Image 1 (cartoon, rainbow, N blue to C red):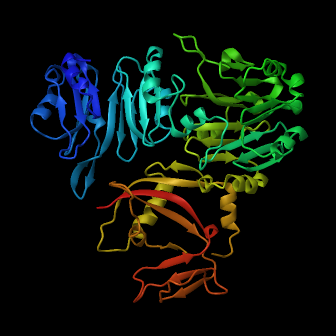
Image 2 (cartoon, one colour):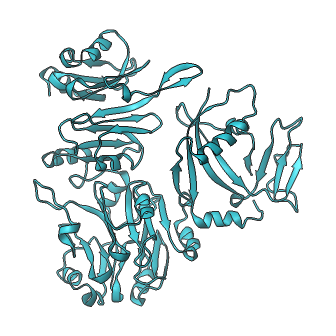
Image 3 (spheres, rainbow, N blue to C red):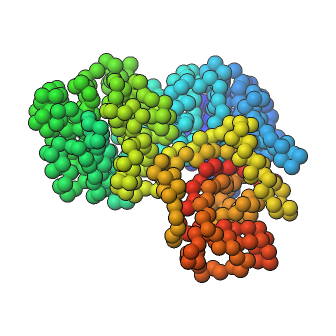
Length: 558
């Protein structure tokens, strides 16, 4: 650290942010206090390599944060503007005829012109980032990112949910792990991971924990959530285990009757494993504790123990740190059809072989907690994410059972697909939104982005089969719907869903009645017609299966 900063650090201040540049340049700002917004400082040495940053500081303009980079590169965020040495980093848009900057959450520079910007709505723009860093940034919302100015492979990310992900020199791992209370060096920190690391064999109250496994046969699978379990086509010995009370922390099914099962501190490997996977059997017989096992076709396997990882394709599957030669910890792994496999390392890094595009896309959607690949269909998978949501592509006949065991509404949405501006689909949705804006006293908002809502097949099928039942308010006027678009946190943006609604036979009325809990007998919905009571139409359905979101529109009021 620069000598001029040491006295400040010795006072153990509570910093909101701190950043360092070349030649002794630095910026820090304290957390707000009861009687002030918190002081901040730019070092006198900043004048040499970053004269414009020092000039802004000396002008008295209030600074929120500064990002320094090599060769005089910088970004400085003030209450009024965003200034960057590279003009392409700062974006603006037209707001009521006034050029306005796009609010920015954070920025950082790497070596050789690499940079990343995270805008306030979560949009990430970058130049020259390695695929590994891009993957880490795409896992979930980013609060803060730091790139190394000397190596493009090193980074530290804090996500908006408080978890972190990092790749740093091995010699730093003990200190970083100690300060973040990370149980394993180099491991990503999330609340759920800390809990399950300290109590790996217990289901924590209120924490959803899904255990899913495919079997080697087409109709074989198992799913367990807390005390609820469903399975089909599994060995009788494993079926008996699944009937027992208690929470399962791991289960894996292999060929020829092989399986691994674990609950609490008890775990077992079936006798049939000795023939199909002799090395797994040998590890089991050695009394070395086993955390989990991944079985694959043709004798492939991975066995994770507290001390090391064993694998049938050791050189290809297991990585080691260059300096310490220690194995890179693995969070989960799975083998699939046709020699495919996937490994999720403890820092969230995904490595895979021969995955189908739909499977890889789902894996990269968010930080993965567990993954299972189908042995018989390369497009089938089950994923549980660290945020306790899930994504899956399974045979249609399994859907009701899996949805019931999950008890998780989030799994209704398979994914959101961002539409490309000016594409035919984007233009169609934009046209529907803008032409249905009927409140003449309110300016039509600016659409910032549109996402297509892709639903799980069984959820869409229930909409198709909908008849009537138990009120969800919709309107063909986007300006009417906008009245009810409220934010629970400060933001320049709002969101609206464009939906498909199964209206059926609608009861038309011009009279409001807030006592209805269902449409009149013989009708499937209620439609409030424009008139003395309703200035714009309203259509109300009384069953979730009568409505499905199709597009998510992010817009900004004017």
